[in-house]
Amino acid sequence: MPIHNADIAKRFEEFADLLEIKGDNPFRIRAYRNAARVVEDLPHELAGMVEEVKDLTELPGIGKDLAEKIEEIVTTGSAQALEKLRKDLPPHITDLLNIPGLGPKRVRTIYTDLNVGDLDALKKAAEDGKISTLPGLGKKTEEQILEAIKAHADTSRRFLRTSVVTYAEALVAYLKKLKALKRITIAGSYRRGQETIGDLDILAVAKDAKPVMKRFVEYDEVADVLAHGEKKSSVVLLSGVQVDLRVVPERSYGAALHYFTGSKAHNIALRKLAQQKKWKLNEYGLFDGEAAVAGKTEEEVYKALDLPFIPPELRENRGEIEAAGKGKLPKLIELKDIRGNLHTHTKWSDGRNSVREMAEAAAEAGHDYIAITDHSKRLTVANGLDEDRLVQQMEEIDEINGSIKGITILKGMEVDILDDGELDIDDSLLKLLDVVIISVHSKFNLPSDKQTERIIRAMDNPWVTFLAHPTGRYLLSRPPYPVDVPRLIEHAKQRGIFLELNASHERLDLNDTYCQHARDAGVKITINTDAHSIPDMAQMRAGIAQARRGWVEKKDVINTRTLPQLRKLLQSTRGR
Ligand code: DGT
Ligand code: CA
Ligand code: CA
Ligand code: ZN
Image (cartoon, rainbow, N blue to C red; front, top):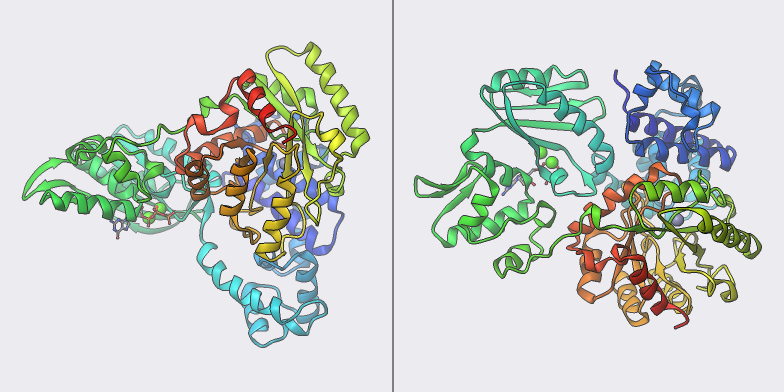
């Protein structure tokens, strides 16, 4: 079986989960999680590096031990150490970690005391009232668990878009090798840039559909063929992702692409528009009675309905058709508009690279500036900086700025919001920084009004630049903490500060609708990778996709500014 980077990352995550349940050393667990991130972001496949006998320890965060594990996974599909961990615990026990309120300690208790090792058993135990008999777990947790299991059933079959990208691109490249293939596009939620994907919907045009279908079902990553037809086939890949492939005639390619790109809500709204003209719109084309009005391209379909092309990311029926009709579609931000990253970590805290390495990599990526924003002292597990070490880091940055070419390093910090909304670092130091980020890394379970008050209090500190990852969610694994985001947006507006769209592919926080909300409220955002290593910087792409779904334009984003413009903006937030 071919091993992609996403597969290796998945094994590392599993390592970390299992070690966590066993109560292993937190630093070792973090090393696996960091390695998973590094691996997932690499622009080239590790399997290729292993084949070419390249030195894997040159990758950030990959020491000798992890390098050996990667080689083992690439050659055998797994690692002995992982198999051993798996044997010690029930096969699906890591699923329990995805239930909010269940950390590794509680999972361990539930497993040792009740012998509950998977979601079904957990559900039964909660229904029988057994969870609430355990030490430290009450009736309330039990109810939470039941609710979460219900919600989990809806989301567990989805995948992070960024992990699907690898599989999708490899499959399309494989299909494209076929001469008979004239066009191919991945439609559906994938094309709309949605943060998670249910399945892949691929459309193709070919001289002859038969060989395309044959090649598709014979792909060596296919685990299961669900249907093998003349025009449509469906398979499940080894990764668990389902793929539907349709071959359509050239003349209806645009209509089909439009239909299968969705969203369903957008399609329905557009179909109504066609009906007003007494026309019919479906996946075969736009028709006036029997006569085709349009269908070959999407542009043609929109144009016939008196609309400009609507970018796929906007097709959610959230006002895009009305805006298009008035010529008021946003000019969506692009990756090339970003001039720098305002949230990055280094070896000073829990990052994998030095300040100089991060800055040089950013310069190479064409950025004009980078803010170094390591964690503050409260976050001990991330080796957060106290005031003394922050001062030392600032000196190092001055020194590097004196010699480095092509980029300016800004001084910053990701300062923890303490329990009461105070900040973890003294104002006398915050005022010396260019970028002061505030974020929540504790007390996720406060009631919404308390959490909102706490964050608002932190936003009131006069030296804050922006609030990072405002809801703290991890896609598909940790729900947002309860918080009133519209109030945070309103408060950012009042205080003249900014909100982050964290581009880390499992956060993508703010989500698309909150981005749109912030934009409508006139609050500027900043899109940052929160990179903990050089490869993490590639995640900017995921952030841009999310921003585009949120109607965000270049002008709405502060880190599209030139350095002098940015400095002016940052200055406007200082000492309010
Ligand atoms: P997913 O796969 O859950 O991430 O989301 P989508 O949007 O890819 O949804 P999917 O795969 O069920 O269907 C692909 C597209 O096909 C969808 O975005 C719009 C179109 N479509 C599917 N079912 C319907 C329908 O009943 N009516 C209309 N108008 N369009 C549909
Ligand atoms: Ca889909
Ligand atoms: Ca589908
Ligand atoms: Zn961070």
